[in-house]
Length: 117
Image (cartoon, rainbow, N blue to C red; front, side):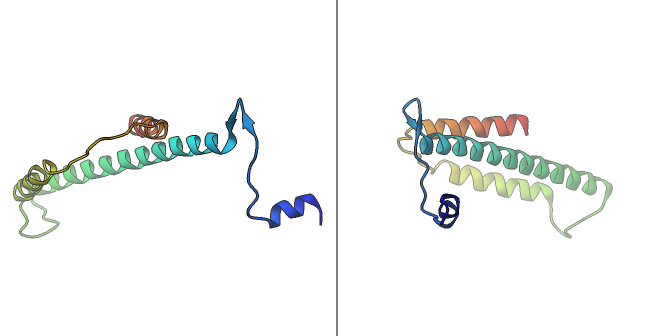
């Protein structure tokens, strides 16, 4: 068997080596963590924008007199959701948050995704 075929057939081949004493696996995991934060930031921004545009569309439709869902008041829905968030957000406990390099890079990627998305 040729060496190239052994590499393709063996799924347990690990990348060995280092750059400046840092193993390749650590560098790859840092890059993937940053990329995950970036993509999640992009998705969150697109989701927020879609939600805002949907609310604006519902407000314009209710002003014109078109009802997408009959007998639903937008002011009632806003009041219901705001009271839900005010009730349960205060009970969330985060505890001691440990900021590691991967968490920091994820948050940086998330922030860039939200900003540039």
